[in-house]
Length: 225
Image (tube, rainbow, N blue to C red; front, side, top):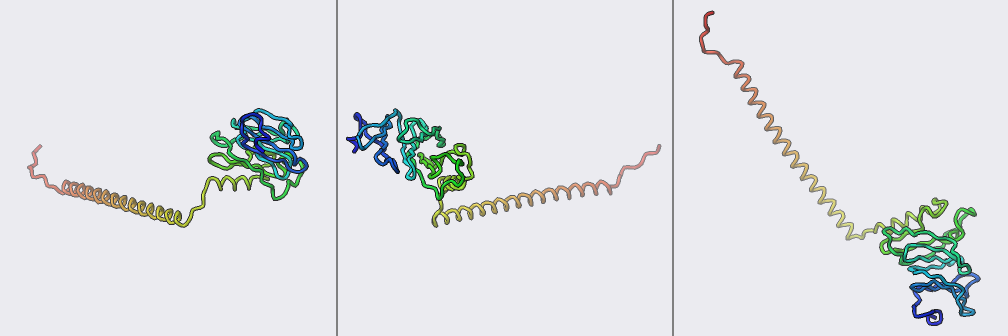
């Protein structure tokens, strides 16, 4: 297959077949070129120069999604050279998109026109070097339709569920922190007690001096005026 569909010495990195009535059409991508082939004639329908890092076909429609090395997303149909949708993929840290996947929706958009045609039957997810993201929020008119899935995706990528060993370690850390806090409080109480005792002692000394001065008797004789 690769030798039949390759023009030049470049190897094919991605290959996707179109669904529905265009099953005889296949999309391939090499390091420099995206090509659309007609398997009936074994000829190229059209091609475009781009460095594709991820390619995915929607299983429920004729749409394809291609991510490029410079962070661009192209959504297109194999029968059309001009893309239906183009935008910069915000992937956090400008990391390259490593893989992409169309995931069928549980149910299609209820109201016609709420989502672009290429998003009505499936949602597009893509994977970078560090995290999993869906299409950015500003790319769709009604984010409420995707918010729940988007947040679930973000949480699953950001947090890992701890196992029993990890839970024990976390509990031990909490216990150690509590002991350190109690020890710190005890030291502060002792310090405050010593300070109070010192202050009380100074007050007693001052009171004794005041009493001694008040009841002292002048032993010198009075002078006649």
